[in-house]
Image 1 (spheres, rainbow, N blue to C red):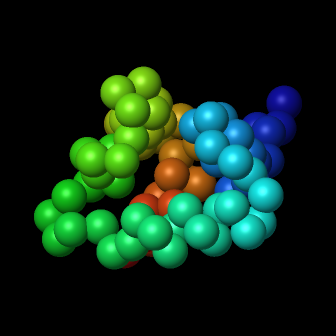
Image 2: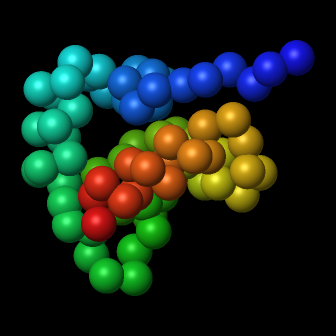
Length: 76
């Protein structure tokens, strides 16, 4: 069975954020750069449930982990 393939817009939707290209670009532009030494999940702009989701996906190397890393790179 193949793993599902997600796009960045799917991650935004999973996080409860607008997933239109312009909205994603605006989110990234308004939240970058992350302060040095702060992990993506520890950024102050997440709700507790969003931060928990991001931490779990990375720590478990789960289905969304690659896109979480991508988002972290876009925000760095």
